[in-house]
Image 1: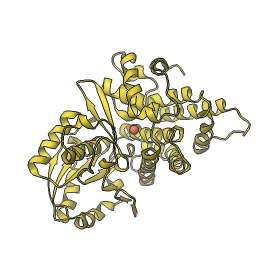
Image 2 (image 1 turned 90 degrees about the vertical axis):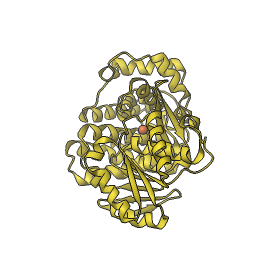
Image 3 (image 1 turned 120 degrees about the horizontal axis):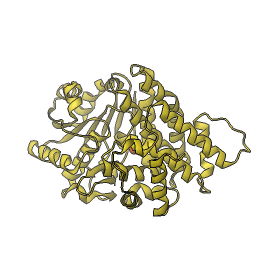
Image 4 (image 1 turned 180 degrees about the vertical axis):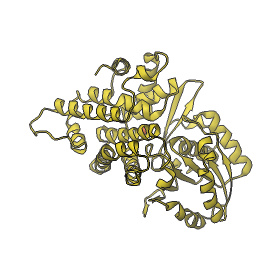
Length: 388
Ligand SMILES: [Fe+2]
């Protein structure tokens, strides 16, 4: 099936990659750069997409050195390749790392300067060159959002860019490209999507239409993520996760995110840890903390309903917050994800420096309230020590 939006076209369903050549022909693109990682290159996934590009009458080259948490250096290498080859479109084959790299390259190619110039919100003037995103994970929602993240290793920090000019032109969510995702990656990316959905509900920009998408995503992820994790060949679970992560992406692209992502970006940038795992560990601790604030606490009732938690309507907000938090902790355990930062990080992180970065992260601006730096440090400490 096909779903059009103001930004571009998205294809869903098993085998939907077959719809790509016709769409590319309509757009008249001729020279593409495929941006992917070594695993997807060796597995033949990048070539499978390449065949569709040839079918559309386009030629292509492949850059296959994308890493998790893509860096400024990787973006610059892709930029050099794209300029040398004079490409007129980019094709990301992968999850958030490949798609975010393509977004950064697209913006710099069209707007000039360097990727660091675009850190923050709405920093470019012109729409980037077209991007096709063939999504191979079910988590980041990057194929439908205006967000991208690039790591700056010199500062040990992640730059968060929010920019509608980076949005993907053609998104392909074909589960044939997701079936071989290992359980660990399924769990981490799936919990990233769960965090997007919950943060979109708790964000200060949440409105009924973003709640509708976010709460539906919560409902689907809580049922289908454990299935996809426990049996990677479960096509229905993979399909439902693909819809849910996309829908969570639509929700947060409009409602924004919040404190979990701001803290996860700082943690992941400092310690070079996977984004989804950072979110999964921090999520219940931030929920506990945020649930204590009036204005936010009531929203947990909606989250609880979506998680399938039953409670009497006269139950206090704080008890609902507790039930939601416990539900998320149990889900993480079922997915074999770490419970604390101690299990994750080899060395004790510098909470002070991480809190400074988190406070400045673009996602923090959408949090329902601005926490004090001291409170951010406390949440990191609780998450490190596993103080539930
Ligand atoms: Fe995320």
